[in-house]
Length: 102
Image (cartoon, rainbow, N blue to C red):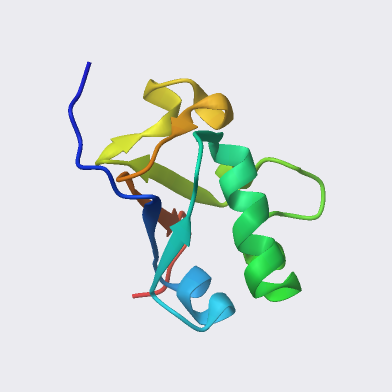
């Protein structure tokens, strides 16, 4: 079991088009209990609106992994429990778009 400082929040980093859609690169979300990745994504969409939803989801999928990699503390969530991976206070989450310009 990992030991982490007691912080009632999660730091989320949005990269590329996701940053542009939300209008910010970093956000600190208060969480009082563990939540699944999909619930964290829904919380972000509630905060930042339809432009973030459009950037995260393609029109035929309800899975944000089709358009982005999601990492928790440096580990991609498909190596964990996918969208059911629990996010806990003190975690660092990165949402990285799969397609990007160069």
